[in-house]
Image: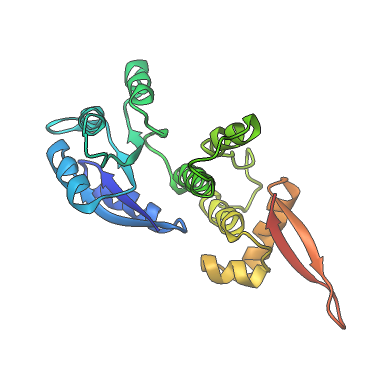
Length: 228
């Protein structure tokens, strides 16, 4: 599980973001902080892997959190996805310079955050699978950088499809590392089998998943789904 710290001064928004994180497979919210001081203390005590970090905090800036942690010789700095209303170029540029792995402008929904978290999880998996002593080829380097970029959901989801549900279904398929049935996707997401089948069919049409047929001894072949 990727341990996640939510740093947000608005308690209501903090709860919403924490709820979003808890719905994405592979992530666990280990704490919530509302100030720079609390965030620094939480990083020291909880050792999170990732922060969802607001820029505007009562006692300073989320960018100050990054600056302070970057200079920490103990090497305890987690990665950070900025989740903020700050749209100015200076804040975006500073976040990039300080090594933030993502930047989400408020307000955003579950689908947008799930995209960033899924891409981040994929990046961690790819890095962890590499031999730290080995040299990489250009193709492997490109794959790592591409893994950090969210793959956009189909533009303008078809009528009757909820974007958050679509993101959850696709996330389950992408994280499975194997083919899944509609029933398995339904169980993992909490939707009905019919709903899972409808969303899976849409992802196949949009090019985000592929349909595989599994033939048994008798009867119709089972429909299985796998991420591209």
